[in-house]
Image 1 (spheres, one colour):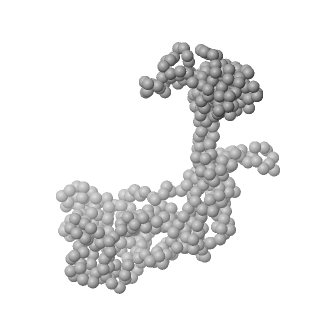
Image 2 (cartoon, rainbow, N blue to C red):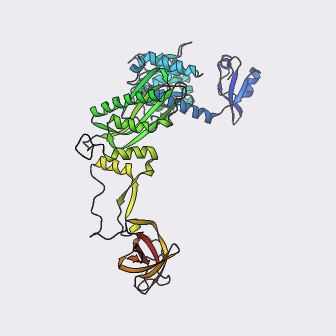
Image 3 (cartoon, helix red, strand yellow):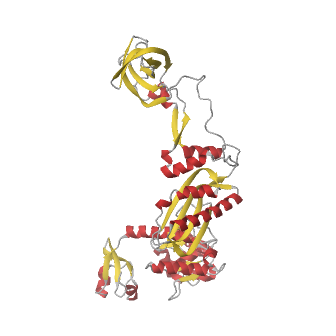
Length: 506
């Protein structure tokens, strides 16, 4: 953007091209956003223009809001050209509120961003000060604590974030400054407006700015349970330094969690780079933990994904989610020298390395059909649920009245075989599987498993079919688990029974 020539961003509207933003030189000439490009060019033929790119601006502002997390996790965008940050409990890390404001302004200006900042007890007052209260030549203004009323009294009513129609009506009533609204009785304010909605909007915005009414704010990310931060005078580049300081943060966070009898479930390490960008890595745990060693081990798995860029000047470690940290067995054996640790730690490391979907556990399912008798569930989710309820979701014995012979290896899907067998219910005498014929020398069965008839209620064409399972042995001593799908008698005989191999015995 040129700085010595009048320049404006434009976009197409209902009445042609209109100006959406101007630089300082254009503003000095009286060119304002909202006027048409034709009118501006008529008065100032040398005005340069370029089409606005609102979507790119929105994305850039969101990136800037992510970077602003270095000043506090509770932050978000404010309109199309602003940010808000809740710095409660953070300012001391930067040497106080004034030093924090200096740091924000200097960093943003070093990125080539024109900035005006305001600090106050409320979001509404900070917005008003930043946009309407900065003295000429100053980049920030701060309201003293508990003096919000006096700090914003001289500001124009536009600072209350009202619709243009509300602002116009207030000015027609002679109310041009926020302070003029203080002494007017509320009933009188309501009577001055034709619409009760307009009067209510004015009073709500005034109360929010003064801190009389709460203003709902939705942060960019869910606020962490606990957070620890470390800033560096010189940006960190080496992986060894990043790992060392991450270990210190993990120890600090673990101590804070242990003090509250909490354990982290999800960790997030955010690294803020010197060039104004930010990145993060996260790790999840199946059971709440405040073990600094385990936290660091999980985060180290993600260190190869970290890009320090031109250097990291601030690290923040968040316990995004946490739970009660109950007494848990840390070793399989009582001996302190045992190398084995709780299996949840192994699951945590595998999940964070390969992904949640890659590590599963088997749990019984309420079905007698073999391929549906077990389900695969996320190991992380199962252990997390068991930890939070303190009751195991796996409750043996299995839902069978007695132990049945089941193959050690069950095929993912039963494979069709060609069988020579007597009818209606004789076991196979021979069968062909994968193009190899096998002669049966011994057979046990059948074990009859009825189909789940209720699953076919919605499909009248699909009739339930019974399975007869046989345990058979071929001439080489191999044991197979096969079944006949359907019966020759007693069922719909329009489709002949078929045979399948379902498993192999050890």
